[in-house]
Length: 431
Ligand code: S3P
Image 1 (cartoon, protein in one colour):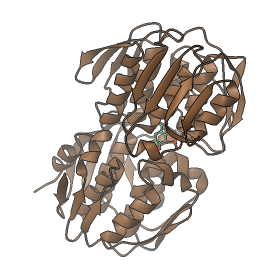
Image 2 (cartoon, rainbow, N blue to C red):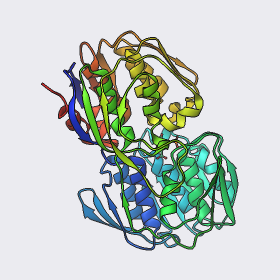
Image 3 (cartoon, rainbow, N blue to C red):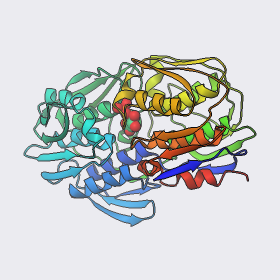
Image 4 (cartoon, rainbow, N blue to C red):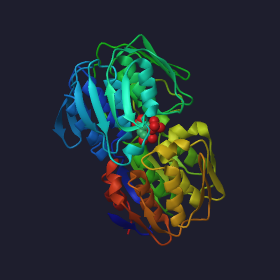
């Protein structure tokens, strides 16, 4: 589906941030592992997270509910179905977290596969630590989906992540619940900590000391209810639109402010953005709490900045938007240490550079990021989403702020994380 986003007048009013994708995936998975029925409210009904609900059902969990409220009756930590073919669709988080649980269940054998994009995304990063713990993982060419997981009695491990990845960290920690002894993950730099917080809420002792995160064997996990906060990564599109379209003033309500997810807002502040709303302080203690706020954003003049490698995991999904802001900012914007962008839903270094160049931007790919020279705005044109939800939404925001509008080729991709995106955006446009 192609959709055109014309240059717009100011954005005004408010949008409720849609439910958080990362937290919804974890809510479904941990509820399936729970011994008690769990009430999950504000679950994201996006394509990715519906894949996760289908996956836990295939494993024996019962899911009841309507709208975005569900009761998930899990199987308990050790009693899920010992064989299933799981279709992860487009969901990298499902593909990387679920094997952590399955790997620790002796006698089980499961196959995971997904769409064309997922078949290009690396599995080796979870296969390595899971093999080190005693599981058997067989992947296509040793590194790609489809792949099978054969469960075993695992041994605890001390695993230093070669790349900062919350998905890999979460996978190893989930496996740690079923492993003998203690399992420790060492992160090169902090990444989103939703799994750790939810495990603490489920009665698991999670030790965090500096860059080391440890869990011990668990008999079972017990969750009661999970209220999913609004997704700061989805909210970021409205934030960017308000920053770029002159005269805008927008409030994004119920947005998650977990500090491991708000790196983009700190980068935007450095570029000159002003926000009203209480964000969690970086380095906050590990509690089950996922804080939220209503964030107000006004249009503002921006200047270029340098995004350093240590900031990358805290803003990983918003880096395409940093490139977009860079096109409108004064001076140069440089993103370094972001080679992980190459293995997202698309190669986001290549697709962002191609997309923004097609709209008149002055942007160049580097090996591990990009450099953007601000030219006071974008002309507009046609942007191909390459099946990548975040690229489609970036094109939409670019269109509103451009001089001639943007036709997004493949706008339907937005449904992966934010099915109501176009409607929410339209409702903030003042005609
Ligand atoms: C996610 C972690 C990030 C992010 C992805 C969701 C998660 O991936 O890009 O959209 O929910 O844990 P990596 O952990 O691979 O960086």
